Length: 247
Image 1 (spheres, helix red, strand yellow):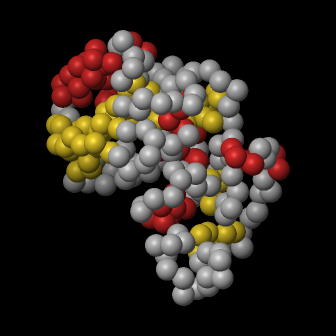
Image 2 (cartoon, rainbow, N blue to C red):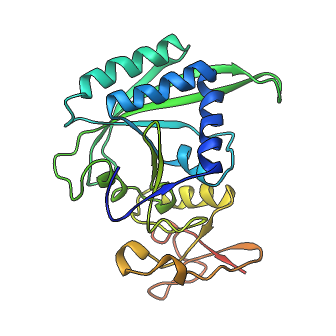
């Protein structure tokens, strides 16, 4: 992956990501999966590589595999990745089109596998999604073009089977919202609960701010309502999602 806004992440984060892949596929399966990403040109994007970069682990996370419909390896990628998951005990349960955003369009196939948990007892559910980018208009080379459509800036990171990347303006552990939609308030809450810090009205990607200009603020996290256009605590959360600030 190349581009002026792409930064490679090295060190312990890569080790953490490989350990997480082993939890999904076992050690031999993780090695095979990384090889398949390279052979198919697919990427793992979103919260799965994000938790590795933060060297954390989220119990309710999932693994999203992105394929480019423009690639000559597209059909091959769908076939071999589906075969890999099915042979590993995953079962396809849903397939749908995600047209939540104006750009791009996605075809999503979800796979589930039930794992016995040696730590918690009982079972845990592993979820993997194969997501096909069907967009026809792109502002940047793929897969960097996908980052321009992600709603949460922290999710702008990727793994290609060998290397781990993030957007240069991805100012972890802070995040900002790039696009608002019906689930934005819920997603802000989710990532705050995972330990990230929400920045109100800050968008380094659009405003040209440098990562170093974001001041680290320490203390507890408190939710507050947005106060824009004269709205106060009684404002409708559907119009203005709940914001979070450091105190």
